[in-house]
Image 1 (spheres, one colour):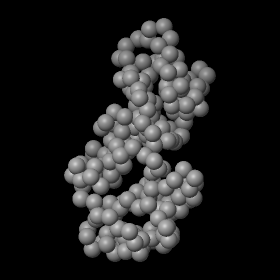
Image 2 (cartoon, rainbow, N blue to C red):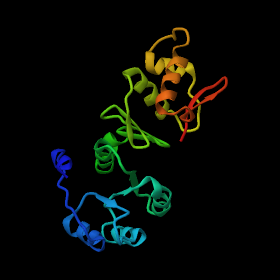
Image 3 (cartoon, rainbow, N blue to C red):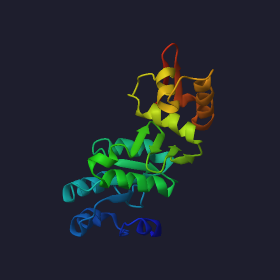
Image 4 (cartoon, rainbow, N blue to C red):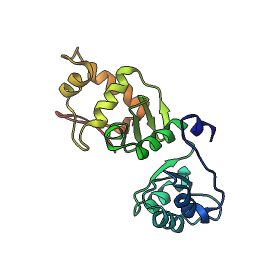
Length: 201
């Protein structure tokens, strides 16, 4: 709560799930962070109440790793966002900025591909909600890959132009792809022979 206040938010804590929708409407809440595993909470009913009482209020659900699949299934119809606990506060702040900002700045603020998330404001990469320490060049490679159209391979030439701004030196792209596979997980960057690389998700 203190961290949210220090970033300009005015959080209100509710311990009874039945009042979430009505309170969000009455208080003019701009967003709701919902612990979807709160004892006694019925997620489908609470989300239905929220979207009836405060249809313009975005929801970010908090869930455990064990309940993630169930949570995603629950949220599919409402298209609400979610975070897997434990998570860095920076990621919650990034989600809130994304949901509350206008279309121009938020379009490039928060980027996701599978379990890889990039907060472009902080220049921070998260994998499965955990921050990953990257060099400036490693971050630039991830940023380039995640902005490339989903499912399309990004060639070495495109990466070199985007990241280094000039012709490659020897096998520089392969070297950095190797670094990132060790840090992000080898399965998250796929090589398409003769075409380039895809950030999976």
